[in-house]
Length: 462
Image (cartoon, rainbow, N blue to C red; front, side):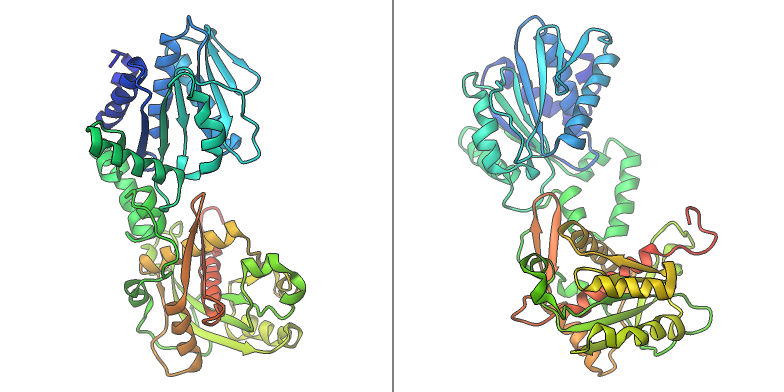
């Protein structure tokens, strides 16, 4: 490997990758590499240092390296900014030139930064030196195969796919499995994998941070498994494992009214009484539901160790369940339950489609304590991840068995709930319509969101 001061400052695992890539570039081997580094482990720094070195070495030649990212804003722009900073750090301030908003030129050599978004027009560029695919797990296989891979066909370019794993259907996973097979045939290492434990060997602060994330999310949380442990998810499985269901089970008794000195929040999931008129779009986001469910939770700050900036625990203490009741028939009862029976400090209400008028009515009646929540693919994904984090960390507990229909339906939905993992680190969670409903499941997720939204008086940032 070229003796570069910048490359030599990289950590050992980064230098291992850089050495293999540069050997392929200078030897014109045209190898394709896949590189998985745990989140915040230095993947982007490795990439920018390689770009700096190659631009420097090829600055007298009219050649290009090409880097694509899933989006132009912010990912491509961040990559460009990082390279500009490294060029300045290396003494090239005033020497490099920005062109057309997506090219950085040093002498005659150019780094071309492109978006891999499905709508981006990228045809016509040639990668002479290097082709980089950033966050390859979020890049379409078809987009890569049709538009990016051909950029290096006439130059036998070396290609690098960077990222963190997600599920077993991504471009990154496909390249990784191909590389494993090629390695078995010729012994040349093409896939490089460094999980959080490897990164932590060289950075004590990183070790402390990831251990905090493991405590917050839980060791089996999808984001922790994929982003830090680099273990791919397998879609279509159960949303909650038997172990997670066991963690969710609590020993406290169900209650029917507020106790003095306690703080209560609520999650309200509304029946889709007019869903037929809402069309296929809403049905895809929220399968047909026949019941309205209110879940009441007691906020427990002891689990946050007294730190109001940490997320509190929540004990589910009561359920209200109505089937076949129109929303207008429930208005007065909902207000009474939230305001008088429980004095809830925060209430997150399903405001999707036909739920919007109900959430507006409750907000007018109860003020800013009511927070509308609109289901979309990204918002529902975040709701699911937060629910898993609360369960995994032991912050969420269901009341003990009382033989009620609500208790039985709650656990039926928890057992039947499934998860589906989509590109861009998003997920869906649901109960198959043919197996039942997910009213209690969604109300529980909205309850966790209500607890997250609550800040005690006197808390910083409140």
